[in-house]
Image (tube, rainbow, N blue to C red; front, side, top):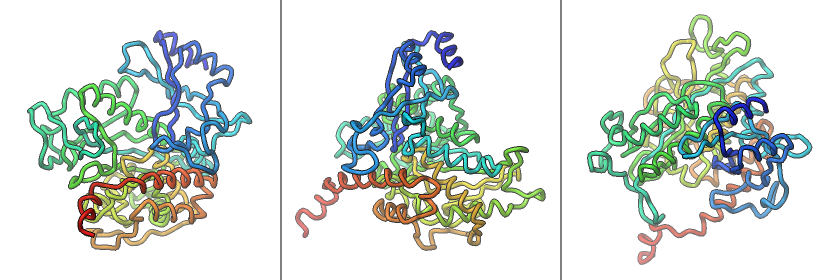
Length: 447
């Protein structure tokens, strides 16, 4: 508590936002006066309903299951002092801090996304392994859209025109929104969000931000805060930033590519490369685990009905879990790099995924491969789009595979798997009540 109190006093903080990520990765929590926050922290009185962890994206709750509503019971929040940061867009001095959730018997809340990732990391630590990750987050800038029935369109840049063609890696295309990204970089610097490279992706006004490699929990925290930061910067410039997996028809989807490597916890040596620089057996086992189990964790890396619109053939997104060297058509790409940087890039996850759960799921699959000593299939040369589509095609299919996987339940927790299933089934029920414009256009007078 000492370092937190010092931070607040030294920076004359008036208010504190206490944050937890819900299942969708949305920031939930409370805003408190600084002194009230310190008093609540000392007395374990920073409380929140456990139901927030099963709140759906529509604001509803499952009718039955592990937690049914915010009225069931409270849990208490323990701020992680390593995550305290400024909120740079407020005029008054304001801090934010990410919290872990506990029951009043002292046990962690099993359905908390941050706790799930912490548990997965602990599995590696018990074996002397230290995972390192680096997310790459894609997102679109779009015009402010107040009518959900209206298609999204790219915003007008400083040239006074909208993008109408693909401008992959276009420097001038990024500079169309230079004032917005100046705010993004300033906000990230103030929050110690360690972003690296900004590029224009293939879609109209689609961008990608890369993060530097680091500890999975730290990178999940940064990605969680980065999404909020980009949205805020966009609003200041009368633009929406969206992390939907497939926001616009005819444009590529947005991914959250996950680079992951494995270090010896004592020496820091990259365990994915042998002393001669070649791939290690442990590296191949990690890939084997990703190949075997990723299809079973798709509700965590492709969590929404919209997510599966991205995962189609010839669309800059994978359709299977094949792997290959520097091959961007496969689900698992091994970039050309020095042995000390040997890593695999999981290209399946969408930008719409909760970063804590996407990282937990991807690392869990690799972990299972390492302990089960699974061998991967042969690497693919050429296009993997010529091969079978083996990933789930809908969230329904994904949930079926998720619930049928005993190894995933053992690693992520039975209660957590049940909670995810209930939330996603509730969202699917809500989605099924909506009649789309496609149905009205093609079925109204033709069937």
